[in-house]
Amino acid sequence: MNDVIIIGGSFAGLAAALQLGRARRKVTVLDTGLQRNRFATRSHGVLGHDDKPPSAILAEARQQLARYPAIKMVNACADSISGTIDNFSVLTGDGETLSARRVILSYGVVDQMPTVQGFAESWGTSVIPCPYCDGFEVADQHWGLVWSGPQSMNQVRLFHDWTDRLTVFADGHDISPDVRADLARRRVLVADGRITGIARHGDHNATIKLDIGPDVAVDILFALPRNKPSAGLHETLGLTTVATPLSLPNRRASSPSRVTPSRRR
Ligand SMILES: Cc1cc2nc3c(=O)[nH]c(=O)nc-3n(C[C@H](O)[C@H](O)[C@H](O)COP(=O)(O)OP(=O)(O)OC[C@H]3O[C@@H](n4cnc5c(N)ncnc54)[C@H](O)[C@@H]3O)c2cc1C
Image (tube, rainbow, N blue to C red; front, side, top):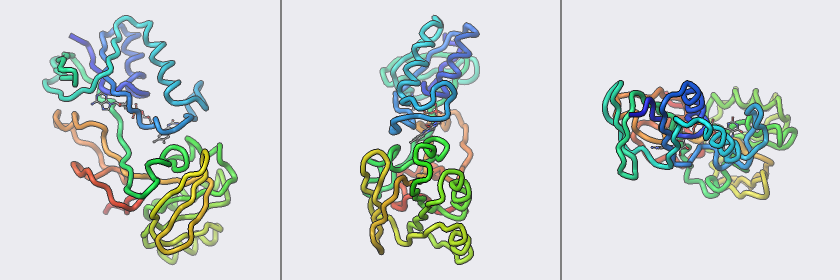
């Protein structure tokens, strides 16, 4: 029996495996190789690994873990889980049943791509979620932000650290006159209408197509699509997740065609 089965062997899961391996625990890591940031060409802000491809960081981590004999890495999906503390069983997609005293669920979240044409193809390059991850590389350039409700004002304030050239895409959201006045005071442009398509050019640049207006070119577009856990094993165990402004409602697979969700009340 394993001491621990880790389901999801990316950044979180391998960090857990490292400490457990050092504590000489018997660990099996199950992973399907679909880490959330696999669409990005470089990863930033991870100490000692800045500006490396995410896959290279993980490859190096796996290499380092190889020196711990009690850690076993398995390329397999955890399909189901049963049991309780001190006696968990995990069934893998290969039909193998593994047992463990403890289980770590580190399968992360999956971003739900909206149906907007070109969005999925641009995700991680021309369309990105986080200024800390990729903002430095496009500082002082023309940024776009897909508005997702009043909380987007926080991003507007934050983005001033990187650029003074910002266009907000309303994407069908009502932006109140007060907020528009605040944006105007900050010299932030507002492009009304819904986004109907995104055409990516080169590494970052994109043309944003709108249903009611002319196309708008930006050097990078920030958007926060909804996400959901990558697997449902926690539900089998009776665990619930905490809703965030970006999480998809439970058990709903489809997403709105809007690029980002409206604020949930
Ligand atoms: C476009 C983009 C760019 C980003 N850039 C950065 C950056 O520059 N710097 C930064 O710090 N963060 C960045 N992030 C955030 C980063 O991706 C996450 O913080 C990180 O991936 C979270 O790691 P994790 O281990 O929790 O989950 P993940 O990396 O998503 O890993 C989950 C793992 O679980 C596996 N899995 C899922 N279900 C199962 C199952 N049933 N059985 C077995 N395995 C399973 C998956 O295949 C995957 O390997 C970025 C995110 C995105 C979307």
